[in-house]
Amino acid sequence: MSLPAIETPVPESYGPPLPLAFYLQDTLVVAQALLGCILIHASPEGLTAGRISETEAYRSDDPASHAFRGQTARNATMFGPPGHAYIYLTYGMHYCLNAVTAPEGVAEAVLLRAVEPLAGVELMRRRRGLSEMGANPNDEKARIRLGRALCGGPGKLCQAFGLDRTLNGCDLTVPARLWIASAGEKKPEEASRIVATPRIGITQAVDRLWRFTLRGDLYTSRSQ
DNA sequence: ATCTCGATAGTCT
DNA sequence: GACTATCGAGATC
Image (cartoon, rainbow, N blue to C red; front, side, top):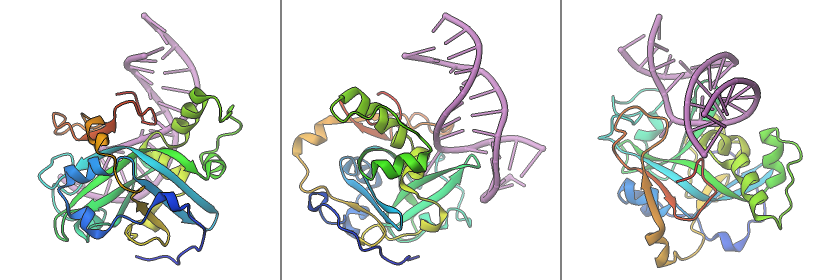
């Protein structure tokens, strides 16, 4: 699946796209390593970007995974090559974005649940249908409130970024339309901030602590 | 702060 | 026909 690339300037600080090898690490490792990386969508309407703040891992041996009962038309992308976007509609009205992991044929993925908006906030606000929201950039509390309203949840994030089915299967390792950038070298102290909690909205395998956030990061779908 | 519920449509049994 | 990797509004504590 490939849509025409959108030529648009992207801040150097976002770093290069994460390479294929990144997505071939263990899915639990990928889910944690994606925290702090930058999700970027260059759309015809403009650029949106955000710092990934909440993820969930879905593995092949995992009753909560769409792919647990085998391949179907919906989950086919999960069985495809790693480093691609798996986007699906849930509850009849919300899209969810995943990064496919594991070698082709092994259906695993990481759900992106929340990001901190970095670029295209006005566009996000329009797409989310939010009008004026006291967005004084000097007020930290207000910034976090706005960030969570825009991108604090998997469905919100997809709406704010303008992601839908047409981007299902998009190659995330190529800076053309939708990709994930490294944000530069990881600070070693970041690893000590990772918090593992139960995944949200599932009824199977709730004992697996495969939802990941960074301690102190408030740009999440809920606290803790 | 935490809850309950309705919206809505595609997917799977 | 049941279920869903969600969200927002409204009620209640």
